[in-house]
Amino acid sequence: MTIADLVPFWTVSAQVIPVLALAILLEARVLARSFSKKKQFQERKKRTLWGVGLFLVALMLSGAMGGAVAALLTETSREAEVSEGTLALAWAVGGSILVGLIFAFSLPLLGRPPLLGPLGM
Image 1 (cartoon, rainbow, N blue to C red):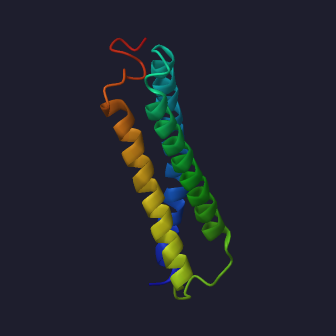
Image 2: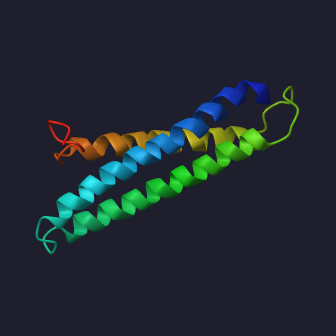
């Protein structure tokens, strides 16, 4: 596998990560709003757990975005073989995107109200 084979992966990753981060941000706002409507003392552990999870996903996606952009900006020969470090970075970026997708899709499936409601309002 050459570096030229990974360029499409890095390009798509650099485009998908910001959109995924925006989706998580919007769903996190809905989640935070639903917690603020209820008594906080009863759901403090759940709120803390979701906050830590959101922080870790944001940290992973930030690192993945940095890795994707750094890999795109690296000036190496396109015919050079992929190093183990670059391959590990690709797996880490792919894993971060997967975790972000799971997190983004799990937020609305947990019974929280959808972002725009049934009528888009």
